Structure formats: structure tokens, C-alpha cells
Length: 301
Image (cartoon, rainbow, N blue to C red; front, side, top):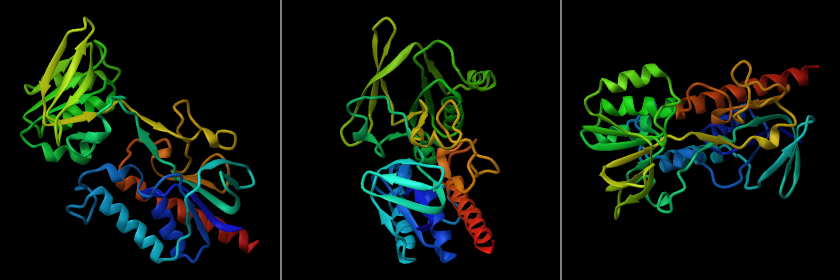
């Protein structure tokens, strides 16, 4: 029996673990792959308070080591399901906890190009607010048609010398206000009815190839490529116990409380307006604090 089982070892999960360990709780962190989550793909972090510059990998290493130094137990096992009694079933074992914190995050939806993985952190990014400042006065492209793509293009238009917004359709799913604002920007060009089919470069992104609906191909020289075609949570395994919205995100009440008492959610896995490193760590600290309070309440009865 653990006090708290934390599912996921990204910034939200590791922060929750840190707070729980400092409260002298017996915890278990379960992680399917490796610690760090999406942040390990960030070439450089410059928007985390108190830290001017740090790579995503270095940040993850520091947080992981900090948690380990407090005595965290981390097991690399894939969680298959949970139940209403807070039993957690993995590919190897079954565990039970007084409280569960789900911090499984969300993964960036990929374009599916063969060379995509090669250029991550080398000119290709999924987060404009994280990496945009590295492209001051340079040429970049954004791929997508929703609010994230439009917001990213607006953000980058104030940094880069030129921004191409590439979308597979002739209209955007995002808000009209964003589109109207972008139309006023001299350094923004729309490439509509087009798909990116190739990324060129040796050690970094140098250009992209786009194909329009008439099968015409065009090579566009860019220094950076930002992919904003959405994120995908992995919460299906929790759907029989807690409420999940139509996009697969966990519905949170009071920020981190799920529809089931003593089960909490932290980070990108939940419905929220902003998915950033700062909000992930904030969720982790709040979820742990609420779980600790609930356990204390249980013990007092």
C-alpha cells in the first residue's frame, strides 16, 4: 500500500513526487518510457522563472535527480488500467494507493514525415513560445490551422523576419480575430491548400517542400519549422473510472480534482487553457498538496 501512486514522470509527475516526499509520504512513480516527458525535446528553456537558460534534457535530469535524492521509488512499467479502489494494474504488477495522481501528459501530433524525428531540436519544434526566440530575424514556417497555429504565427511574426503559415485547407479552424490580425502583418505569408511533404537539411532544417492540391511542389527556404497540428493525450485507460472529454483530456474540477475522489490529475493530461512547463509544475505541486490533505483527513477518521 502506497500513500500516493503517480502515473507519469514528466515535470508534473516529478514535481508532485517532490512535494509528496517532502511531506514524508510513501510514493511510487510509474513511467512507461523515460523520465522528463515532452520537455526533453526542448532545445532550450528560457521562460521558466529563475532559470535564464537550460536545455530540456538538463532540466529533466535536475528534477529527476532532485526527486531521487529524496528517496523516490520509480518503476518503468506501462500502466494498463486503474479501478475505483485505486488499484493500479501495470504490465508487470498490481499496486494500491490511498491516492492516485495521473500525470501522463500529452504528446505532440506528428506530421508523419520520415525525416521528422531527425530534426527535432535542430530547427524543428512543436512549441513556438519555448523556442521562438532562437529565430530572431530569421525565416520560419508554421504548419497548422487551429488556434495554436494562428497564435504561434502571431507570436513568431514579432520575432522572425518572415513567417509562412502552411495549412492543408483554404480556411482556418481557429478564431477569425487571429486570422484578421495576421492578414495585417507584412511579414506573414499564407500557403493554403498545401501540405508539407519533406524537410531538407544536413545538420539542421534548411528548407521544406510543400505540395498543393494540384500536385505542384514548391521548396521554401526556412531556418525553423514549427508544427502546430494538435496534441494527443493517452487517457483511454482511465475512461472507465473518471470523466474524460471528447478530445481525450481528463476533466478537472478545482484545477486538479477528477470526477473520482482521491484521484487527481496534473499537467497536460487535463483540460486546461495553457500547457506549459510552469503550469505543469504548478499542477504537480497542487495535486500532491491536495492528495496529502486527503490522506491526512482519512487518517484522522
